[in-house]
Each structure stands twice: as C-alpha cells, then as structure tokens.
Image: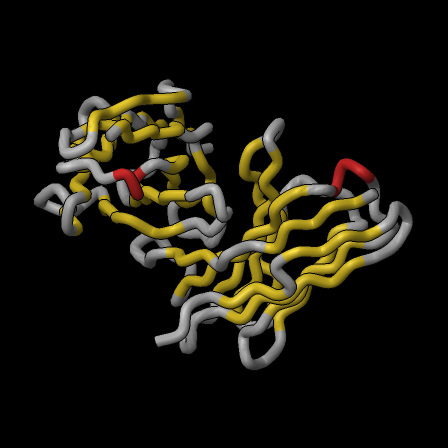
Length: 115
Length: 114
C-alpha cells in the first residue's frame, strides 16, 4: 500500500521569500504520481501541481515547483515569492493504488506567511 | 469551464436524521470520489464511482452510501446521523481516475450534526 508523510505540521515564511514544504512517500509501484493541494480556511481543496514518476523534468506551475527526488522518495513543494494569500494548509497526495481513483493524503502542513 | 460543484455548502442536521450531498463533476469527467475531513482523522476516502459503478470503497459503516448517475453527477447519503459524522465532505472529479489524471475538488459540504 502507498503511504504519504508530511512531517512539518506548521511553517512560517516571510512575505516575498521562498519556502519548501516536505513530502515523502512510499510505494513499490514504478508508475505513480504525486499531487499537491492548497486548502484555505474556506475548505476548498485547490489543485496546485502534479508530478508523474516517469516525468523527466520537475513540474512547475507559476510560483509552484516540485523538487522531485525519486531515489529519496520525496516530492517537496517549493513556493517562490510567498504572498499573504498563500497562508493555508497544504496537502501532498497520491493515488492508492497508483492506477485507481482513491487518493491518500499526508497530514498536511499549515503555512503562515508573515508581512 | 465550470469546476466541481458541491451542494449544499453548509448543512445542520439532528442526530438520527439522514442527509444527501450532491457533487457535479467537471464536464467530461467520469470518476467521482468522496472524502471525509475531520480535525482528528484528517482526510479519509469514502468511495469512488466511475461510469455509474462503485469502483472502490473506504472503511466506513454501511450508513454511508453513494451513487452516480448517467451524467456523472454523484450523490452520497448518510443515514442515522451521529455526532461524529460532523465533518467537511469533499468530492473530487477526474477524467478517468487513473495514475496520470489530475483530480479536482469541489468547495465541500460542511455538515454539522447536533
């Protein structure tokens, strides 16, 4: 079975600085994908970025990028130039099993951006 | 392109009642999955439907059920509500729910059982 671990319950970052949110995973399948979601206090889960295990390059979407290290089984989210609106919970997720419709999530990291 | 729509957004029910939540996926998406989010348990998978068939089920009692219609809209039902069912219920929509397809969530339904 797949497993996702986020070890940072909470983090602070200064506005306009970059921040890295950690995510490690465990799977024995060669084909899988990692998702990152942002959940503001309103509750909606907002899709940020996706990385497939066979993707040659790290995924990027605007200010979001994924530092994907397969050998270490880590898929860290990097947010550049943090904004006050980035304050939220962030979840790392993957499908379990990789080819199925079920998502499993890490425990989440609460990011607070300071002005 | 419209996103995933969940209705209602907020709901207050009494113990013992039943409730039905609705999820309209993104047009063309055939996979809908449901999740329960509580402060204590985090995000837990309830079930997934694909082309009107339940494809996967989480570890929840039989009071939790769901279905999917031919237009891919999905409903979940909780009967005989308990206080512990108070949670944010989220649904996710995918094109096919396979490894390389992204999953998009609705805004959630916040259920309070009193």
